[in-house]
Length: 141
Image 1 (cartoon, helix red, strand yellow):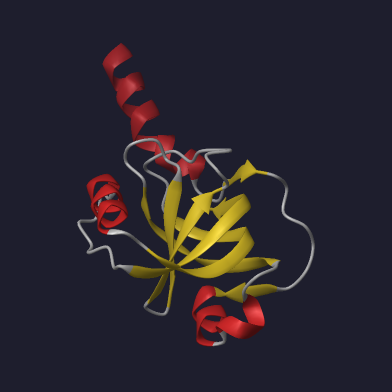
Image 2 (image 1 turned 180 degrees about the vertical axis):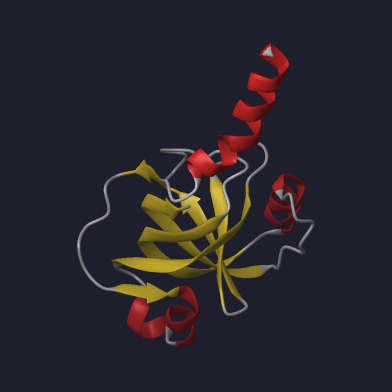
């Protein structure tokens, strides 16, 4: 009987988490949310000031959870969680909104190797990437 109860508990645990929202960093301010694919397509209009961006988390730093990859319609942006100000669990995936500053970043060969070593997806890390330095992240379940 005890094993049956344990099995039931563990089999329903994912259902209990469905629909939960995870909040990391600061609370996001009210206001417009721009998909990262739209923001990158018009970088001049969306870079340089803190804004809210949306996409789907597809990867998380596997060393400390200090960055995530946010993707929308094939456009990926690396989201740095401040200056290691907060962290996200390494297994988080799904729709998310981030609040931060978008830019284009040139990576040194050492930085490319460093990021590649921390990825769970095995995706190539490019020498030039779009990046958001985030103050807050909300993940939808």
